[in-house]
Amino acid sequence: MGQHDRGHASRDSLQLLRLAEGLTPARAVQLAAELGFADLLADGPRAAEELAATTGTHPGAVYRLLRSLAAEGVFTETTPGVFGLTPMGDQLRADHPRSLRAWVLFQAMFNEVYAAAMHSVRTGEPTFPTVYGAPIFTYLEQHPEEGSLFNTAMAQHSRLLATVLAEAYDFSSARLIVDVGGGDGTFLAGVLSEWPDASGIVYDLPYVADAARKQLAGAGLGERCSFVGGDMLRDVPPGADAYLFKGVIHNWPDHDAVTVLRHCRQAMTADGRVLLIDWLVPTGDTAHPSKLIDLSMLLVYGGRERTREEFVGLLAEAGLRLERVFEAPPLTMVEAVAA
Image 1 (cartoon, rainbow, N blue to C red):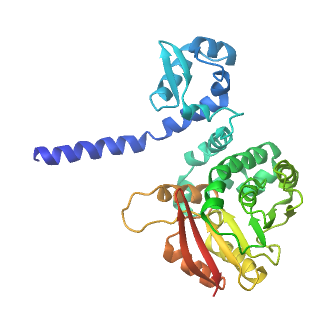
Image 2 (cartoon, rainbow, N blue to C red):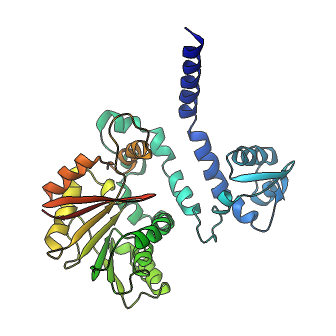
Image 3 (cartoon, rainbow, N blue to C red):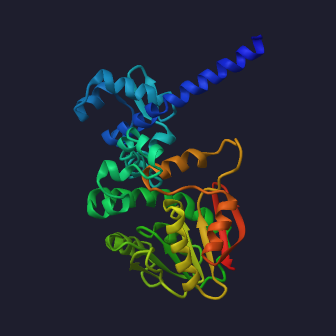
């Protein structure tokens, strides 16, 4: 083996090690969120020993946790043993306007799912129900605390994308927009705030109603946007010009996704559109976040990420046609019309 080949072998080995150890940084940032370190550091740097005393944890272990995350840019060691926030770590504060704390905490729910993931590999079915005793949306509806965490996490994620979509996409012909699986309404509120001539409906399971109505009222949209409770596998509100799905269709296997999309085809106006904000998986060995996210979708939801060709087939079964793929980084959206 030549020196060049040895160099490639070394890089390959290091990459394999990095992949195998990937759970460590995920769990580290989850632990920091669970302990509320970012909130405790909001007023300035504090010693690891002081943070440990406040949270009832071990000083040495806390130091090692914070040091590991400082190396990833989440915290910074301002002086030996004393840590402060970085702009990244600041978003772990519960009161940060762009907080991602709930998103991080929600991801921690899946640790046991990943540990039992061989079930999905052997069966092709999601692992979440074997760990929690029910499919994820049933579980969240039956457990209000976790359901609230999910809704907050989705709202935090939605806040990142709503402004991008509202500024980049032309909603001028949309008189009524239905956000299917719209959670607490954060995403649709962000769109409607930029398009004052449109009205909206947030459509989701009934248990989300109180949070959605509060969110819409707080955004000053109580007159222009309402919440409707229901099950997208049964129907969707009729008469909309745009049916918006943010990170929803990838939750479902093909047969359920077709059912939902067919409901939209039957319910929408003659020139209506279905807008699917999901990952688009590139073919071949191209590195892309969608490929690992696709595996997570199998383990947790029983869903999948899809290639362009798979979207074309899915939409065709529902009586729709892929019109275009709309890109506004970091957002990718499949726009469909009646076939």
